Length: 513
Image 1 (spheres, rainbow, N blue to C red):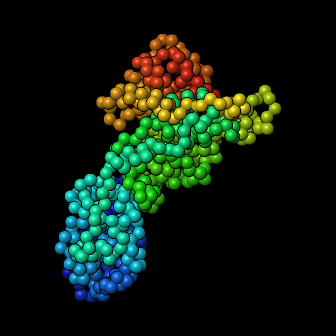
Image 2 (tube, helix red, strand yellow):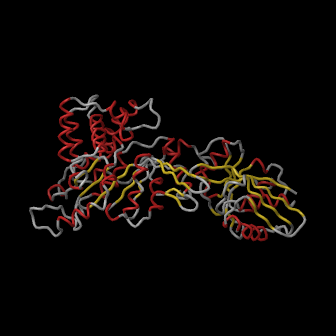
Image 3 (cartoon, rainbow, N blue to C red):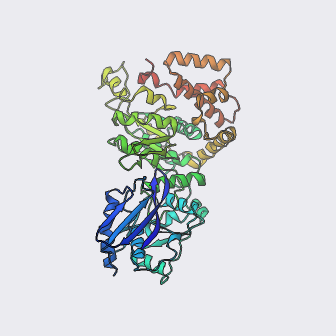
């Protein structure tokens, strides 16, 4: 007897429906075909144990399980429940006339209970798009799938419960979550605020500019000057995520298996801070079964790299293309997978190996050569892709003990939102461009015109700092953002001057020298 049921495979952040055909015939051997990996092949043992534990039997005949289409690699343990249901139907142990209305996924424990799977959200979206009426999955994944409208999400605890529902003995009530309610619950709450930071007004100004234009930032300062504290508060002044951004971000975390059991929608911008021992694959994504890396998990949010020179050079260099393209392409012999990677990079570093600012005119524990060698651990091309270089100095005693209340994140965010609205209106007819940092070179010439005084100022800065053409574009982008914060239609010399000061570290870093 032949049965047919449906599961799904996740490639990148998209899902592909898989048809599981189970045939039970005369004979005594088990076959699984359709490019299954070892985890899928091992489902034979899990399914057999789960069936026997729940009072059913594993057919001791010629059993063929076909996973179609056969040219797509099937990976992971999430097909266990699908295979078990197909086997029960094809062996005549259950009556399941409407099994083809269901998309079924779940990993079986040996006692038949269900363990969570990865990628429940993109699987549910694809199932809805293909017209399935029901999505049966482990209870632990039900909240993330429940925000998809137009399909009934059935949370299942065990194989026994799934069988009872299919046969009509015990109806599983679909779980329902209002996407709008999930989006607005604790929306944009971070638990940290810029009002916690005393002093550092010039640094806060730089972070405000970065948030307003979506610019990348490098902070250079000695240990204890507040670099990490400031970086962690940057998401609190970014605009709230839109519903589409929240769904896209949740899909990535769902594929990576990073969502909590009761999480249905990520509605706050992610903040990722990997350790400097991270590998290049863990940062950008990849592996035998390509998974999103830290830069994709930071999509629509912030990636913070503390102690930038301590990261392996190869790790930093693989970020150069994603910083420009805002996507990561993982190529393998069998397939190519794209992961979104539209993030803000916030990096920090010490100005010298000892952590102190280097002054050649004063006695210093680090030689000039040691300082230059330390700074050169970060390549010029990577630093060229960072829009703002901010010099962070320690907070004075008077600032630390001042009684005045620092400006809150909410107050700063209001100015950021005004600037972002200007940019959204500016780029409303341009697909894929939402802020000033996304402008390509040809658009910069159109949107960032400067007068003769501004041109002279830029020429002087280019010659004095030895800036590259890319750094020139960065200055114009940042100046455009400063003008937006100032509600100015034109870029004035004052806006350019402020933007240029955020490239003052280029000479120190050895770029263009």
